[in-house]
Amino acid sequence: MSERWRKFTRGWVVLSIVFTVSILLFVAANLLVYGAYRVAIATNVIETNPFLRKYGDAVRKSHPGKDMAEIRALLRETWSRGMVYDPVVQYKEAPRTGKYVNVDPAGFRHSADQAPWPPPKDRPAIFVFGGSATFGYNIADRETLTSHIQRALAANSGGRPAIYNFARGRHGSTEEMLLFLRLIFEGARPDLAIFVDGINDFYRQGGRGLEETGVLRQLYDNWDSNDLGDHLPRLVHALPLTKAVGWLMATLGLRSPITGIDVTAPSPGQKPNSESDEAGKAAKSLALYGRNRRMIEAVAAEFGVRPVFVWQPIPFYRYDLARHPFRDDVAHYDAPGLAEGFRTMERRWKAGELGDNFVWCAHIQQGATEQLYVDTVHYSAAMNRLLAACIAKGLPKDALER
Image (cartoon, rainbow, N blue to C red; front, side):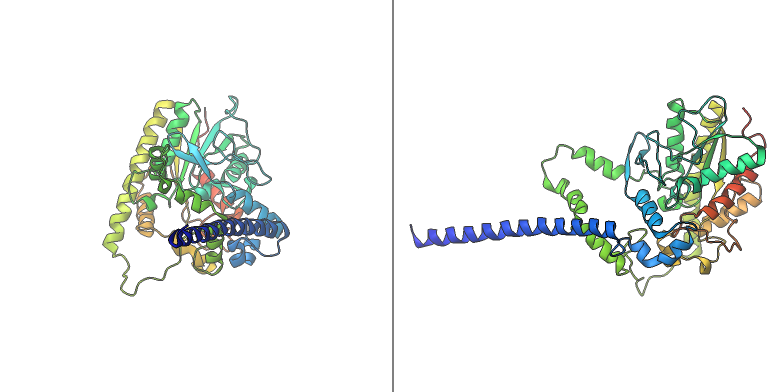
């Protein structure tokens, strides 16, 4: 055997050993991180939730009557399950059963005294659509907006409608319109449909592209792909080490513990948008909202459904942020044209331009002293009680007549 061949063989053996050891160490590191995380959750040796680490006292105050063990369980039930595929609308909250958060396979979250599915014939049916605040992130089923609407309607009229919470995280008026159409197409017709909006449409800036289109297209186009690059990003994202890095960044204040968005300081030369820019972006988003509303109304009229449109409260409008216990992360939820869009809608409402089936509720937090948020933008039970009262008061008197 020549000297060159022996050197090559030794080099190959060393390289193989280094590669094998590196793989084993990488696997061991991920298993160690995963095991440590499970132990930390089970024993509460450290607070594994960066949100609770940052805002623990404020979180406790936003959940009166619950101890920290209950709050941790509630947050785990809220966030431990992601979205799953849903025809037409693209995604929905994953079905789940828990002590605090229950989501039916039909796509709605349970409310207090939840009616069966499909809706019974002997009671008026109400479908409620909206985003994550209406769904009720970080609160229990009995504390959601729909649960409070049901109580408010019962107190006002003594009626007992069957209410269904079809709100979903990240939904705006486009997704709500498509979900409403799909439910009608499938034969699930409510007597009253309530659409709660006011924040998510501004993130789309008037665009009709659904949020998950790019991801779903990539999954479909590369379903049978043999290219590792088509699948590697998802694998890396699922690794315990990757999640540990995200947790560390949130703990160090480099990433929002609520949104997961990296925290970056504004560049020295960065200037805020001009009033004309804000007005243009607000107009674009509101035009999309108006088109979706007209389509909902057209379908509702054809199938005998009463639609009601609610404009929701948000931290950016008619609210003293000094009272907001989670205000450090509020800026991450701002969107171009958001504040100007709310001012425009209030002017239209006051001028009577939005119709009898529009309910303005963006003002309800003005001057309030209760803790109205359980995180940056999601509502506490106290806020849902105020919002439900506003909606119940603003409904047309014959809204639930059959």
